[in-house]
Image (cartoon, rainbow, N blue to C red; front, top):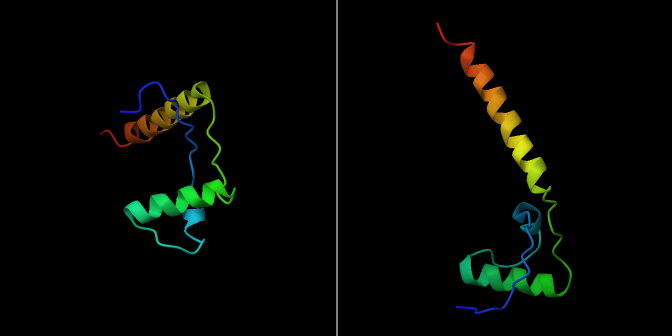
Length: 73
C-alpha cells in the first residue's frame, strides 16, 4: 500500500494524552493525535531494547512459574 516509503512510529502512552482536550474516538482521535504530534505536544514513551524486553519477559515467566509451583499438592 505504501510502497517503499518508511514510516516513523513512536509509542505513546494514551493515558497521558487523554488529559489533553479533544475527541478521543477512532478517526478523529487519530487526526487529533497526529495534529498534536505535528506541534510537538505528544511525548513518546520509552521502549527498552529488545534484549531487555526479552529478559523482562523471562523473569516474569519464572516468577509466575514459581508462584504456581507452590500451589501444587
